[in-house]
Length: 99
Image 1 (cartoon, rainbow, N blue to C red):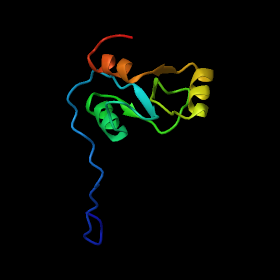
Image 2: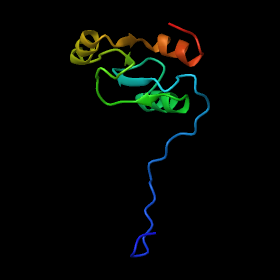
Image 3: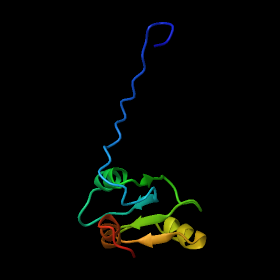
Image 4: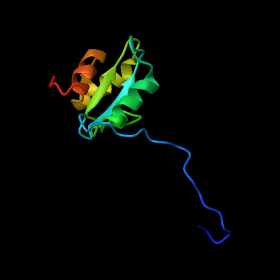
């Protein structure tokens, strides 16, 4: 507790991990998906040991690309050599399969 007797508690709750199948790989989610809402994808990534980033950079492992994805993210990912995956590819990763 602080001097004033105030204890700060984080209200941001990270989902409980269920596996490490994504092995601390990083993802950026972009576009619209057929089977998932973006929040659901983010939660799945975190629950399975991955990380979600907000922008494409050289440190990114995967750009999870849905329909109507902004062309600038795709171009940047291609330029940096980031692997661009589909919703089906993501499901393969969740199942422990390699791409």
